[in-house]
Image (cartoon, rainbow, N blue to C red; front, side, top):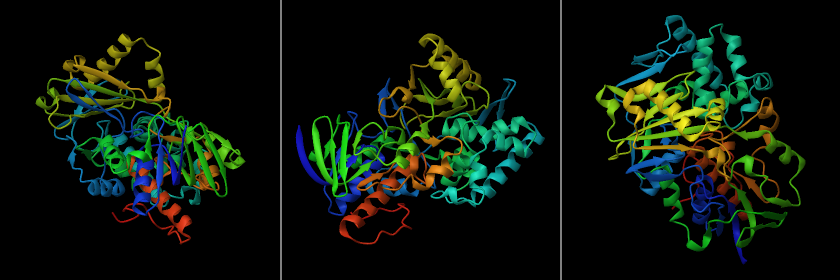
Length: 468
């Protein structure tokens, strides 16, 4: 067992932990990053398959994600636009396929009017929500104790409109049935993106991609750390702490430090043994945060054949097995589609044998984009639910009533222990942008503590915490 000392030990080498390490280093603080996996990047992960670049985890960057954009600029990494040219496809509640253009789903004038009215109402409420403190909304308790589905149903008697609006947050973001999370949680999701309109606009929220892939951002940050400061395959098994500091016990290294950052999702906070145990409030809070479940489908073809048919590759359905599909072709690669299967539909897919599962999914892609979709050269399913060090995707959210009850203390440190991840971010919640913000804010907070200076609570993390 190697024994070392640092100012700060960081648990997790995802975007949050690595960004914190980068900023702490700029401020002259020594760090050690302990990562359970044999790679960096956390929920961002890229592999080459059949000559194509497959982003197994997070990948897109939108105009409001200014923290991620500033980090990408600092690292000298380029971005490129997602392919958007051509018509989109919608599969309705009756299984009928519609090719359409414009922003509105082809669901009939009255339903379109209801969808737009619900979106406008969500925008109005979202403008009243501080993403860093959604529990301070005057109706927080009321909004947090009704499911998003039932809340939408209280606003309209059009069930198709309810399903279409619910699609964007339930399947599209929180990856849980809309009956299992609150209206307040949905408002946090939209507030984190600036508005509900931004969240439902795929051309905004899925605007650009990273030239080196999203995991490439973490790899570039890790390359700026000293080799002796990054320890892979070192899950933290025990954390001993007191008011003076911590000792983090990994698989092969033990780190004594003045502060620790738990840069992992809340559903993994309980993995290490804490000596002494965490206070009651923290232990209970973590039990009310859970991961969603989504299957990210990757299908690679010799060419992007849908483009030849005048289609963008974008498709939606509130009822089909695959609820979203996009052209995911990386620059210079073969044609690649990415699709998403969420919550209970994902459960059902994992109950099938491999051949049946493949056939069902490819049949659905073919419903969107034609028979050629049934014959990919590469077919791969991202299964984050079986990843020991993630256990779901995309991120954690609270159960009904949990956000207003436990949210106010979710970011509070316990002695020398700080918690930081995209799961407990405000702006950028659930996204790499939120991870970057949390890494920067936590680093700045710790530097203030160690140096005995004041921490500026208004600091958003959109810009680097410290100079290069």
